[in-house]
Length: 454
Image (cartoon, rainbow, N blue to C red; front, side):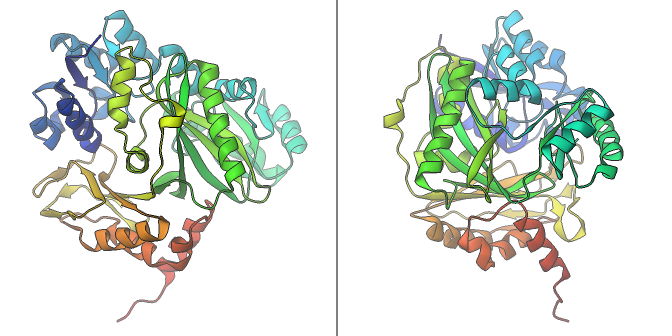
């Protein structure tokens, strides 16, 4: 079937992004917006806007019944959930199927399979992917026995987790019981599921992911991304392809990600996240994100593909439009997340009114944003303001373009992490690339403790 009207059940830059692709495809768009977003840039770009509910996300963007009711009222053929909010919610996927509405994403069964980290780990083993030593916990005594078997340090992880919540490192036996209690309480509060499990903790690791696309019958990969610059497991900078990986290791990662997608008979766009153990030059399965990622533009830059258009094509029931040999990779791309937060004060959120927003317009520079001069940054949602993406002939060229693009950005009225990114691109280790997840906290500590000129 060909979709004629899509309800966008999201906000901010991803809602703008989806709306623009739908317009290019000749598909009508309806934005389901909370009270805080009824006059947003996304609302001005779509054909129609429908009120979803009050500003708090629990009463609007996280309300499955409200989202489905809005799609029905607007006679939408499909719902695109974007990322975050309900994008990986199996209940929404089932509700769409019950209402004869296309869910632009994987099946409810696939969301169930990868949304539970232990289930996903089991599927990874079945598909032949390497996993870190670890497993489920039946109580404190079992946890102690498993931790002794794995060897300290170990990592406690929430079964239903994401974004680093319910994830804690334990370095000594006496820390295990209190850390388990803390992680379980955090997981219960964040996900309504207190279950946790253990894995061996990798001291020096890189966060590398592989973009996959499947149609339920076959699957292909669209290359790697490196997401190792993180703060408290929240990504800040992403790049494609992942630098400084040996050709053999990279090909193994590609094959593993495709094998996982084929094992699930995966339908749609997804990301297989892997941990590269720098000490062993080996990788392990972490999880699968069954949605479009925030960092998808870097993959679009090096492949020339529109990943939202590919999502829609699969959702319409069409087979993959590309074979693996058709995918070509060109150059290097880097994305910076520009957030409304004060990076000098523990990244404190900075809602308020944006007096002025200026972004660069230059070759091989892309800005995905919902921001305009005069925009209000509400306190209810993620602090992402814009994604600045550059595409260079190689990584060195991309870093130079990023430095110039950041210098051309201006956001006045709210505190942002723009100065942090400007400092980052000047750093020699960043320019060299290939660092592990421990590098950015060290960079941050050094910058914030450095003396300033009086």
